[in-house]
Length: 213
Image (cartoon, rainbow, N blue to C red; front, top):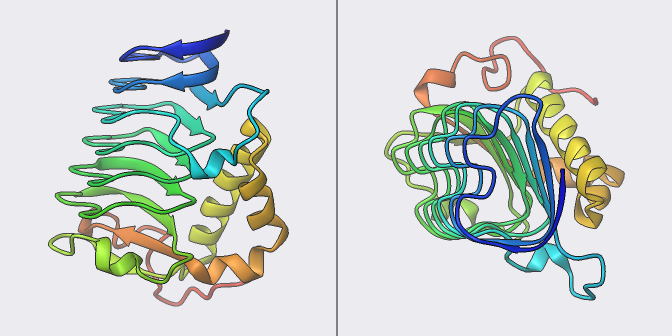
C-alpha cells in the first residue's frame, strides 16, 4: 500500500506479516508501535530539494515494543527510537536522544548523528552507528552495553546487507555512498553489544577474523 502526505500518530502500528506500507511524506510519533511483521518504508515527497539524510521524517518513540518486521526511513527519527524494541529490524539516517532505550532484541542501523544517552537500559539486540564526527562513544550510556568496532565477518555482513536493503528500498544517496566506499566507511561504524549478544556470531571475536565481504 502506498500513501502520500502527512500522517498522525501510530502509522503502521501492529503491522503484520504480508502488510507492506510505503509513505511519501512525514509521520508523527509511534511509527511501527507494536508491529509484528511486514515492512514500513517512509520517504520524503519526490518533489523535495533538501537532503533527506539531514532532516527528520518520523517522530518520537517509533518501534515502541515492536516484535518483528522491518522499518526503513529516508531521514532522521525523533527521540527514543526503538524503545523497548524486541525483534524489529530498522535502518534510519539519524535520531534524537535515547536511541535504543530499553531495547531487548532486533537490529538497528543508524547512518547519521544521534543525541545523548544511547542504549540506556538496552539488554538485547544489536545496533550499528555510523560515527562521522568521532564523538559517538561520548553519547552512549555505558551501564549495560559494550561498544566496539565491527570485529567479525558476520557483523560486517549483517550491517552491509541491511544498508543495501535500505538503499534498494528508499533510494538513499547516503546508503549508496557508504556501499560504494565500503572499506572507507566500515571503520567508522560502532557496534553496541549487550551481554545477551556477547557470544553472537555478529559480535564475538573468538577465533574469527574480519575479512572483506
